[in-house]
Structures are given as C-alpha cells and as structure tokens.
Length: 296
Image (tube, rainbow, N blue to C red; front, side, top):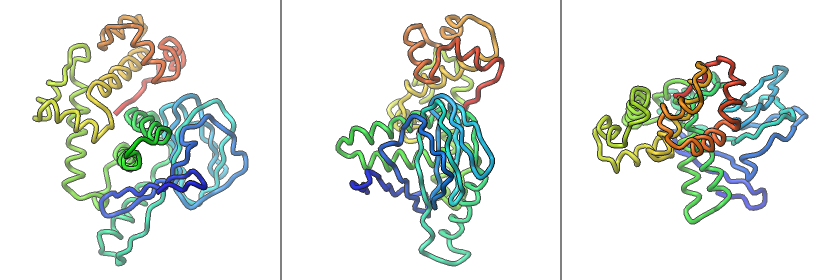
C-alpha cells in the first residue's frame, strides 16, 4: 500500500459493495501553504480545517472554510487554495468502478448511489467534531508507523468516510449491507440521544451501557468502532461542545459553565478547550458573538 518513492499511501477501504482508495501523504496535516495556480485531478479531495480559516476557490467561486468545517472538492474540478492562517487535514480518495457491470447489479447501484450523494456534498459547517479525533489518530499512525499501522490506517479511513456520509445525509442503502447500516445508525442515534439528554456532570459509563443494553466493556468497543474513541474521550468531546454552546449563547462566567458541564478541574478544562478550538474560552465567546455552534 505505501509508495516509498512519493511517500504516499494508497489505502483500500471496503464500503459494502464498493472499494474506495484513500491517498494519504505525509503532509496529511499541514499549515496552509498557498496553491495559487488552479489545478484539477481525477480524485475527490476532502479537507477538514483544524484551526483558523482556509480559503478555497473552486472554478470561479470562493469559499471561506472555518475551523471544524468539511470541504469536498469533486473529481476534475479546477481549484486552488490561498495562503491563509490555518491548519487542516486533507486526504484524497477515489471510487473503483464496479467490476460487475449491469444496471441491476448491486455494485452498479451502489456506485451510482454513492457518487450521487457525494455530488451533493460541498461545504459542511461544524457538523461533526468526532471526525477531528479520528483524523488526529490517523495523523499519529502516519507519523509513528508502529507495528500494524497499515491496518489501523485502513480502519480509520473507513470510519472517516462512513462518518462523512452519515452527517451529510442517510448512508446510501446500496453501499452497505442492510444489517451493517442499520446497526451503525441505530447505535449512533442511541448514543447521540443519550449524550444530549444526560447530566454531563454526573454521567457514568454504566449509564450508557444500560441505554445500549450491553456490558461496560462493550461500550468502549462500540465507541471505538463508531467514533474511534473511548467513553472518557467521547464524554470530554460532548462536554466541550456544550461549553462552547453556552459560551456563545450566554454571559455566564466561564468557570461556572465548565463546572456545570462536568469539568471539576478548570486548568484541565482550559487546556482541553484550547486544544480543541485553537483559542481560549473567552476568545471563543468573543468570536462567536451569539452564533450557535452545532454538533452531532
């Protein structure tokens, strides 16, 4: 899978009836370097802005892609990136055409359904902070190259692409076996509903286990499969986004908000918040000026 000459990795990902190839370079996470000349290529190119603002022009239309946003460039589209102050993840991927031809074949239907859904995706604004964790883990695997890292790259690419489809709409029925798609969506919906309704200052892993009707050990397995993180990591993510929501909508003291959301150690909260959003809580409140952050 790795191409040592170009330092690129071509990772095959199986999504139901289809095979996608993720093309990963060692510059997967990079600060914004200007690409002033419009160019195109035959692959999809997915950006996730980790901090700052990235300005991208597709054709003659400019886009301002802020921290937490996804941006998808489609095959053969001319595009360029201006020099701005941001850091971002980016990966390219392609879809292998079906080997079994015919309008009625599952592969052909899956290919059409997936390309149709991707054609509707361009700029997704702050829709899924979970993917940030998956992307960070993918970057870590690329850098450290520990034993088994190629398998980990494959699993993480699969999770990232699946989440991209999930947050942009329903997972195409022909792209996944029915049981897999239903189980994925069912577990995600249960978990999302649980965290939206629970008391963030008192919630325990056993509470989520009870909601899913599984053991505590299985909870972490499910969370790693769906989100690439443990219960503690997921809970921290949810707490941070709830703090962000309250910072944007209220004038309550930051210390009170953080405690209400379950952060008993303010210094730990401060470090987590700054790492997550690239700014202090006060700076975040000033920047949002009443805008409501979103999370799934």
